[in-house]
Length: 287
Image 1 (cartoon, rainbow, N blue to C red):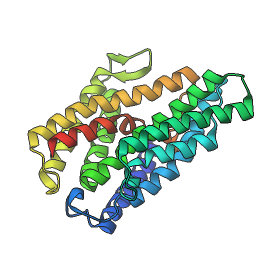
Image 2: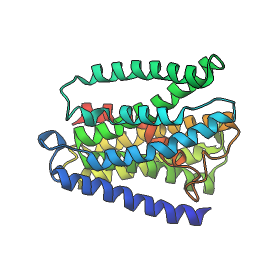
Image 3: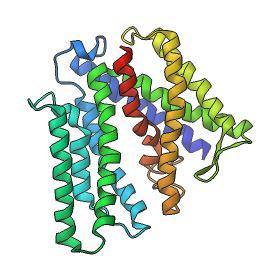
């Protein structure tokens, strides 16, 4: 397990950094703030999010199926990608973001009802439509803030956010394995401990401060970066617990077996996924 975590964790890290850096180089925001750059931004990251939407929706579909819930995968995948790329389309169309989101969410609901009627009639309407709407919002709306951070604030704040949250996961895993005794949330994730949480906080604060003092484009005082690390160590762990609730309900240890050592793709992105809206809010009032 640890061997595969190290190998595939390193490969995924290198790949993600390459995508974000190349994306920033292509649109000129790598060495300047994204807000000052007028080019179309976040194209590569948007493509990556769209490509990940398909397997993640399949993972959610398998979790839902254990409770006899049907995820309309073709529809929910398209809907979640349109929602996830909301900020990207704002660079191309002259429609206010809130109008785009409100009408998209309304059309998604109507589309789900039509899909349900055509394929399943009146059997399990609330359960199926509710599960599908949740999958679209959970994946689409939350991941839209990842792209929003990239477009609004640039590649380095995005890397800072993702690294803080994922390094907190590593700190929690390492400290919990070595010193863990007191359970953090035994009903949801028995493996999590307060000692692991302490490790997550320490690692997250160090990583955040390193980004703040070494990256010129991240205009954040070291003490504010430390506060960022402290907060997002907890928020990231909450995101992990949220996904654990889904797996616990489905009586599954992992969302899938697509990533050796980690489980499914959802097991990899769960913590930054839920933390992304809070990170956008933090950056909005910090920069």
